[in-house]
Structure formats: structure tokens, C-alpha cells
Amino acid sequence: MFKLKAICFIAICAASLSLKAQTARQPVKPLAQLQQEFVDLRFGMFIHFNIPTYMDQDWADPDALPTIFNPKKLNCDQWAKAAKSANMTYGCITTKHHSGFCIWDTKTTDYNVMNSPLKKDVVKEYTDAFRANGLKVFLYYSILDTHHRLRPNMITPKHIDMVKAQITELMTKYGEISALIIDGWDAPWSRISYDDVPFEEIYTLVKSLQPNCLVMDLNGAKYPAEGMYFTDIKTYEMGAGQRVSTKDNHMPAIACLPLQANWFWETSHPTTPVKEPAKLVNDILKPLNNVDCNFILNVAPNRDGLFDDNALAALKEIGKLWKNEGPVAKLSTLDAPIISSNIAKNQPASASWSDDSAIMDFANDDDFHSSWVSNPTVKNPWYEIDFKKDQALNTIVIAEEKPNISHYRLEYYLNGSWKPLFDGDNANKIKVHRFDRVWAGKVRISIDKADHQVSIAEFQVYNERR
Image (cartoon, rainbow, N blue to C red):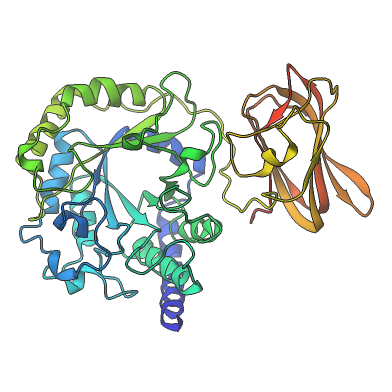
């Protein structure tokens, strides 16, 4: 553990000096500007390339030896030129996938590319090649790590030190990183919560090292489309059935899909037809771009480290059918993302009379598909969280499954009396309230006006770092 902490501390100190020089050259941009620039990019390339490439699997054996990773003809310039042929604007490579193998020269673990026959930093090869071809650079990183046993019920402080040290390396060794796509957090298949590995700490670390780097969590599907929870960009994995609304999306978003049959290369890929370019362009790329959604298409390199001929041909065809028409319409004004732990989750709750079984406990169970529903006979419903002791807080979010609340009051309880926080109108489905930090033993909402029966999916309370 000491070694990991030392590596992380030294890297952060060195990075802070580098950061001062970087920010002197390049001003820190507001998040809204970064989100706008991202959707304006429109189309990019995902590159799943790691130990699974050599196993005919998307999820590799966590104990597979580094010796199997041997791309003898590795050519990242070929990848970049293929991306350019499709009129893509950026790339994103899997620096570490779920089985924990690192394809950069990391000091945090021996399970890395320098102990493979290649003995070459693939992340550096990729970043150099894509920049040389005028493409922006994104990185992918998995929190779930089955090789290092970073799994549910096994997470230790040493694991968190490792994550911080690895992300510090990625954010300081390869120049400007426009986005970090993180996977394996808060997903049904990973079961690693934002508290198990503290999201706010990791997010803050990334921003401290690269202020203009967008952080995208690839597993935000459980959160409402109208709210920005634990990500700077809404994410949709289309292969898992996640779909952005092509009618009324107003959030900066990204959707991903593989060109081939799988995310990682398999031996069947060279002879299996890839997805039809015309359908990708007309049925996916264009409709997504029309609703502020960037499309990232995965192309898997083979075991030599090259793209197959059928993939190269498809990318060229896409480039004939589609051109980047430039910036999209200006994005709507958005609240800053929620990145903190919800201190109201599973706390004792009280409320006015509920409608049958839709009792108050459904409004703070971390499930947006269940709700506390007020009995229709109650004229002025209320809902309350009891912390059992005074807590510091500075943000309250009310998420409605079926929005109907318009005018309401928020209050906090301290020293025997209720004190006001908000009294007004807000018809948004996700109602975000940020205020100066207060201490409170309880918080409550009192509803004065709603156009039909009141329901609250989640009543959330946060003490954000600011």
C-alpha cells in the first residue's frame, strides 16, 4: 500500500507543476463550453484492444499471462488514418479493461504491456498517432478489475490507491486528454458503487490534473435522462439496449456500438460481415447528431495490431456517405453534474398519507423506478428525511418519475425549528437546488401546487465539495 500511495503522491505533485505550465498556455474552459465542443465533434472511434483480443472473448481470463499480448505489426497510425477516412474527429482506447491488464508503462502493477513480448507503451503509440493525424485523444479506463480483485465485497484502501495512481499516470504522461470514459461503476454487472470507490474523489482528481478533460461514466443508464448524475456527458451503450430519445433529448450525450460483432476482435471477424455503413450513417449517426448525441463506433484491431480489411472498407464507405457539418445548435443551460454521495439514501423517512403501498420508503431507495405517491385526498402533501443527527448539506435534488409538482417549499430543521431553503416554482422533472452549506437534523419538502397526484421517485441530499 505504501508503494502505491507514494507513487500517487509523487505523480500528483509532479502533475501539479505540469498543470501550472499547461494552464498558462491553455485557459480552463467552463464545463458548458466543453460539453458544447464535445457534441460538435459528432463522431469518433472506440478502440477495444487488450488481453481479450487474444482470447475470443469480450471478458478475458483475469489470470491470463501478459505473454499472450503480442501485436507483432502494431500500427496505430493505420488506426488513425482509418478514423480520418470515416471523417471521425477523435479516438478512445481501452487503457485497462475489466480483467486489469494495463497497455501503458505503469508503475502500479507488473500486469502490464511492458511485461509482454511487445514491451512498448500502446497508449503512447496511440496518443502520438492520433494527434499526428489531427484527431483528439480520449482514454477508456475500467474501475472493475478482476485480476487485481477489485470486485464487490473485496475492495480495500489499496485498491483505491491503485485507481488514483493509475489515473494520475494516464492524466499526466500523454499530453492533453479531452475525455476519460470510465466503465465498471454502479452497473448491475459490476456492483461497485460510487461509494465503494469514491466517485467524487476520482472526479476531482481528474479535474485537478486536466481541468478541460470531460469525465464520462459509461454506466449511467439507471439515472433519468433529464438529470446529469455522475458524469459530464450522458452515456448510452446501444449494445446493452440503452437508447437516447431521438425526439426530445436536450442533454449532451454519447452513444456507442461496435462495427464488428463484438467489442474485442475475434477470429471470426475477418470473414463476418460488419454493420452496414449506410444504416450506421442514416439510422444511427445522423439521428443521434440531431439530438446533441455524439456517436462513437468501436473498431477492434486484430492480434497483429491492425484493422481487418472489411473494417477498413466500411470506414471508407462511411466517409463517403457522411461529413461533419460543423457545430450543432447551442446546448440548453444545464445544472452542474451530481458527483457526491447521497446522504439521504435509506435514511428514515416520513410523509403525509401515501397512496396504498407506495409508501415513503420508495423515495430514498436509490431506485428511480419506484416512488412515494401521495394519497389523492391530501391537499398539501409533505415528505421528510430524518438524519437522526445534524448533518452538513448544501444540495437537495427532487427527482420525479411523473413530473407534476410545480410550487413547493424546502426547509431544514436545526435547534428545534424549521428554517427556509426554497419557496417557489420549478416544474422540471429533476429539480436541483444548490445553496450555502447548512447543518440539519431533518429536511423536508412541502408541496403547495401540483397539476395532479404528487409522486417523488428520489429525494436526494448531498454535501458537495466546493
